Length: 187
Length: 187
Image (tube, rainbow over all chains, first blue to last red; front, side, top):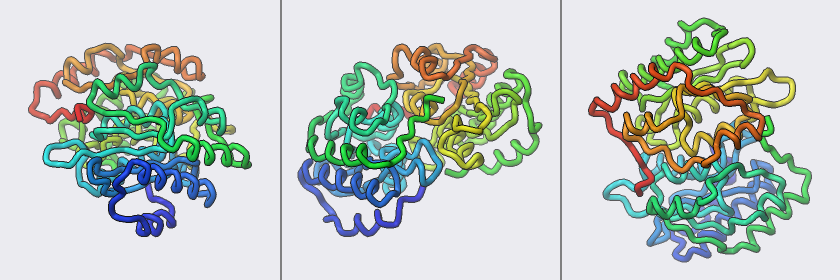
């Protein structure tokens, strides 16, 4: 589950703390763009931060094709890397600061379930409408129809529509390229 | 994402082909029990087989706690391992035999999404009712209310209620032990 080489150097250039949600999302969107442009995966990135201070834990990117692993979505990569760094399977465990997941769009059906298991306390997304699927051609799967409420019920706050246009610009560029769109579940 | 040591030797003792669905499920349930008894993870296992011949590709087990990784469910481990073995992110890709996922209960919300991305053509489960949650204490999360139909729509056949009692016996033993039950999404 290794990240591409450029991720380590880009992470090192970011400040240790990103206090505002806009700064966190801007960093995530930048990684989504770099991942697509450098051909190291799909146009998706996800960051784990300490919610209150904005301390950057890690940013992960989509690695499905390079790693031959359909589960290597950005959220799974970021959450798994964060759990290795914090040395726990539960980022919401006792004695830990609240952790936040920042993603450049609403998670797919798989990552939706994954973020619930991860222990994060809030989810920040650039948008949740059909734009991702329309602009890129990806089919994000059967997420629960009442997905936001199901998160809230479990103590996970959702903040939607942050830097929406910036996120869509990356999806648009991806959609206009010749990149392969993998929708595995057509069987 | 390493499996426990015992998995390799147990896999080596299985025949190369398990022609009937009962044989496939029995092997998976045995792995779910061994994983719990040997304290190498939760009472869950998942096998990937070539659908028609029953050729065993791999069986994976839950590794959440030992690996500090909340996504290390049996299905994710098995599908990822199978994709490494077959060298593709799409087990339903052109030129490949149809692949089948066999699990000792209905997948959680995350693994439900993961199996759709994986390219498998059929899902065989020991059961899909509330027994798993009742007997073990695990909360499997907000799966889509019409989950079976959503799979069928995507060309993934579902075979339910295979060796149900045998699967429940393992959950019952787990529930009666002192094993930790992790439900991360309580935050």
